[in-house]
Length: 600
Image (cartoon, rainbow, N blue to C red):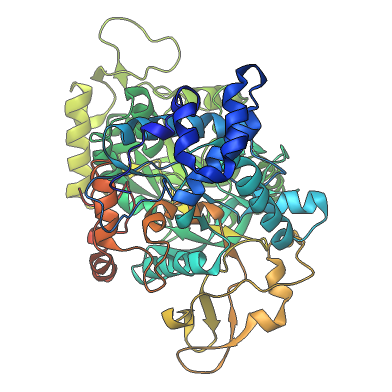
């Protein structure tokens, strides 16, 4: 298309240059077009649009020869979910603006690559299939056809359909599974037991982003907490890198501030508090205010903390278990809301503050989260608003150790001042005391300065049918074994009974022909992982697949990807070979290809 210009296909050109197009289009529709262009008062937009869209398809005007073009421009749009009978108006609102910019860029001489595809796996599409009572394989294919043929093509956008991507195509999800295996080999895809968000109606786990005000974003059902074995991607290994790269993004400052808050970098002191009467047992806590350690009057564990059962006394057992059961009905987002009433239960056990050897009670409360920090806090009600509210609610001691420079505090004083009642550190200012106390703990090997992040690992397991199977095999002899790359894709079996069970296991767990297999390492009997991966994993890398959609021997071509993104963004993609070699190197150097992680 290097000798074609965009002008005849511009938005205004459809109307202002219509007579010129009439002669250019060919004689086979001359009579029809003469009629349309002569009788302006009888203009038929449907006929005009259909004609010129046919011309665009016939001439291939919107196809881009990525390998040979000198000035490609990757005009990337988010691909839609085919989880309804038609596109949402919000889709076309976004696509139209992006398409206008693509046409503008083409008029400036660049060869615009504007692909489109379908994020067709996942809860969204499966829930629609459940609602309609139609197998998701059939209904999703039907919806994709409608989206493409009767809506997206009629929209007049300059989509290059020769590079269409559909996440349910084995040619695509083979590479989603391949990416998962690279992360697994690098130690970045891990399986562990953890409290997760569970939607009773959708009967699956949800990521935090899929929980809105304590309810499922799709069905508005109240989300509860469950402890399940799940697969996570260790995105926390990239927390510092993600923070640093925000400085280079051309985003609004408000959005970047929200991202920084989401990652939540905190510097402080981590130390252990021995448990009285329990030899060799201690509670790890983290504080951003080492200058307040002499103010600790109690300890709070998250209800899910692994030490709760061990530390709870028989006299408090029934109260603690009742409270833990109550906590499971609340999502983590709901538990973090500061305005709600503070609740908690005393475990009957006591910890020892290593700063002053004081014996202090151990409580559990739902405002402490197992997934953040150590899952335990040293409570300093004189200098923390949440701790102040909790201490007042339960009549716990409040000890002030920081004096404001100019007035008496009303409530918790969270600012800096002069230390009092803090042993050898009394009389020091907060910043100096914090530094010296951290060093004091470090010198005695009872604590250490550290950095923590609010960001948590990405939960990708789903106990549903409609998704790419996670390519893992379990063998009694060899343990957790990755599916060999030459056996990819692990195909999603076509089964009649695909409805979610609500048992914590995918419907695939009951498909013997899928579950029962042989260990690729020892050849003995083994079983497949029956969870599928979240469709967000598909949509995390589809933009890399678009330029390389014709390749079956690689997920994406590194040179082609670099070429397509060079003119469209400041990011440069690392090569496929580099990704593979780095996946076997030290954790701090591991790299996967995505805009937030690619080498600049």
